[in-house]
Image (tube, rainbow, N blue to C red):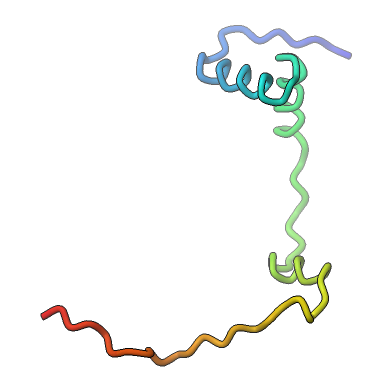
Amino acid sequence: MGDILLRNVASDIDRKLRESARRNHRSLSDEAQVWLRRTITPVPPPSGRSLVERLREGLDDDDFIDLVIPRTPDRAPPDFS
């Protein structure tokens, strides 16, 4: 495994990395590797389905209800004159 040495890291990045390492109970080196891995790992392409469609795959139809939203107002609009 290779080594990487970073110099002149911006203070805000250094602070965030140290805080993240402390919060996740990792060494600074391990946390930096996690950050790098997340950055260079390709994001899978969208499946073409909406979030609702993907969520419905794992649930039965009985778990959902369709809400009917009335198109007509239930009261008169306010008069600001």
